Image (cartoon, rainbow, N blue to C red):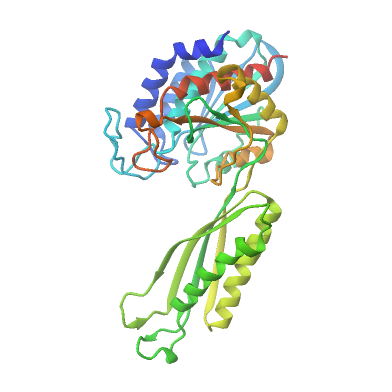
Length: 390
């Protein structure tokens, strides 16, 4: 089968599915309607279907015509708490909730890949485990599915996932071996001092001043503690303290994120952040409580799996349109699956400047070129067939 032509023949169905899901977005662990559509469609194709995994996750198993390895294909389903600002006939009908990261497209792609591989079923040596995951957007959906046993019965030998990406134009594919997306931490620092009158600071221990020093000192972590050949990000996202202009508050709270690719760099950065907070607090006579929570580990792609995907992508878009070097300093919980199973997570370019489809992910005006949908389905199906060719 020519998967590119076959996927193009499904383009209208792909777009219709994506737009229906876009009109009815659901937040993480609340994807009841979406999961119902997925389960029904997979069941209609004759796949063995399991539902309710990690609350709303769905798994469909496609048995090939011969025995062989198990390939896991993962697609995320959740939307974001964003009020959409687009003017389309498929705009979100749910106030304050929007598919602003392309997961509606991912679900449509996954269902199309199931259709395509079903037609190749007798030629497949092994089985395909379709995993439709809830709650990717910082809520721990992948980790919850792992805990719920999604990697058992049968255990995958290889895992593939994809993401529509407005960081690349339509027709480009990014397949990067090694660390491809960063580990992500959420941190919260609470500085506690002694409140007092704004005109008598000598009688107080000011957590606001301490917070200002913490923010400034944290800028030295990447600049002076990370090898320039490596990379990291330490961001302060919020500062909250006080309620009045003439009162020194007793407490100040900062929150932010840390991003790294290399585990050794991560450990160094975490240690330096902790030392800076502790040192500033001691110097300014306040107490400090620092809580750092892992969002996702670094997403590390297996080189052999990347070669498989790269060959499938070149067959669809041409070798000149496959990028093997780009990395993205965002986090993705597919990393939890790839800690357990070798695999590849790759990106499908979906931006189109000529049509104004340029807004980044998580923006209230995010949208993508739907011509990327059949390209993505063809590449994923092609990679699956190559792996299960026997």
